[in-house]
Image (cartoon, rainbow, N blue to C red):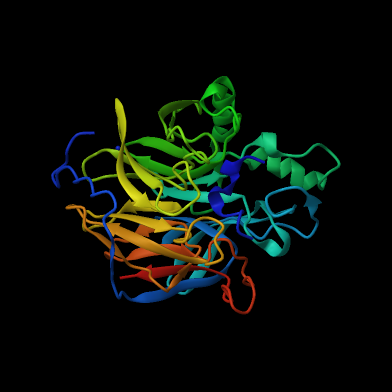
Length: 382
């Protein structure tokens, strides 16, 4: 399995200047300041909660990657993979979880930890939202290895981008994972040790276009109306790299550019994750010195926010994560010190609050009495 498959944590268990102006690039290596913010649990006992997006009229859309299934097969980053149909796309309001689409493909480690399946959501046109699945159909084992119904769902859903209504009806928009896999196969020279590979990890709907950050192909792509994709940017790594870049998130900035975060930036040790600023004809590193970025976006204050999955580096014993705020003048502030474990998805609420999916690789039952005992969560930081 490719090193880029760790994009969801399984190794452990961009334009024209807008009215707000072009955002200043932060100083490399600037030390973030701490901030004592309010931490409120909005929902808990969730199954591997990942991507978040504001919903019209309040609330949040959420992708739950599920808790896998009861039957496990050998293979996968955790030593075995347990596929099932426990993923969902949800609507989260204060203290309430409405699962809009259920019975979706989910493949986890033993005990429902670190599942793949539904990974991202993005508010769409009207009352709809986009739902994204990780991986691609080339990951599906041959007949007879896993239950037939589960295999059929995996073939129909992995790597797919859906348009979903609040009533739960779905429309397949693109097999973006398979298309990214095919692109990586044609460009195997870019990552000869890892390609072909694809693992869609985040979707953005902005200015009438759909964008997907792919952690396996290390790309930002635009999904066209016919389901085909155009590669907008490929995230390169330094020549002495240990890993791929691993593109994990994408957001539209106040300046009109797209901002893409990465998990590793070529190295497993802390401080190597970067943020790229992407315009129609150029992609350049905008921020450095972050660690294991999983989610990102801009707040109503115009600042950029990034969730750090593990501040000590991917696979470290310490499960602590964080949220880093980068102001318009480049000042960095940490918002989640001592409060977050394995955070992933990010959303900026209309109320000015910051929402994060916490314990994002935990099933609803948690990962033990000391680690994420309330399972996956959605939390609010102010």
